[in-house]
Image (tube, rainbow, N blue to C red; front, side, top):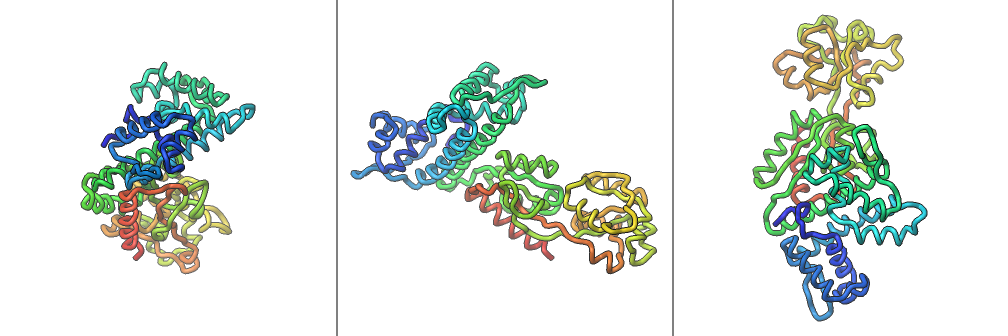
Length: 412
């Protein structure tokens, strides 16, 4: 079966025809609703079935019903259409009747328009999108011009690097990317029906998950489903959460931010990761015994950047103290923090699991703290974050189940 994102014969109007026939339970009633002839509808359904490589409808005397494969495709195609409908409704110009403009734009929208938008968003300019996709600048520009005409508003502007998407174009591009994801999911799920777990899982991962969790999950999943494809993205939380919202990844594993539900994302807590005050094994602070806040203020610190869970815990620890700790270095790099700790008298707040290996070989040690200080140390919640409207495939659900099982072992 081909990848639907690369199928030249897959047309969104054929998908729309299929959806209307499913809704009305009949090719003739679907044709009437769409203003098409029944032969035209029959031809469209046939081309769609050939493109996806599966029979999608059972024909009988009373009408049509989806096959098992058809029901899979109907569910995903419906979600795709919903994304595009919302995108058009959000983008259409105020002076154009919305219902008419949305219907007209959906009727003319095609995969090449969606590809043009998502390529522009990813590359951040028309010329860069042309280089990345191999499509000519003329074809990309034509697709965007058609959309702008249908919607009655501009989607681009001229920036320093050339033609780029404006705010309306960016919003439409995000919806288009999510719509294309649903087609990819449909393709994966149709393969799953054939017993071929060959789908793709795109995982965004923060440092702790990469070092202690993700490797085991991937190994277990590939042992069960060796044809699965797993793509791992790394970066800052802001970068990865933006990738999650825009459909560039399916889930994000790492420290949860600001509660479990925020801005269209849902976080599931997997385990807690306690914080420790950390220093090199032969640091003079270890000779003190149980260190108080005043002792901690006598040494320089490496701290993470603001608005990260660990930095907020660091600031809370010293809240109300007579003075603030001296932060010489701000960095979210564990490698750099570790190097500075090993070569100086700096202290750092790190999670217990981040320094587990260094503690085992006695390179770093957790500072012994007075009870009133230790009681103020908190823990960060490690979890998995997904889009609120995400519907995982069977393979992605299997990944989540392995993730939850492995996370149980991290709770001790």
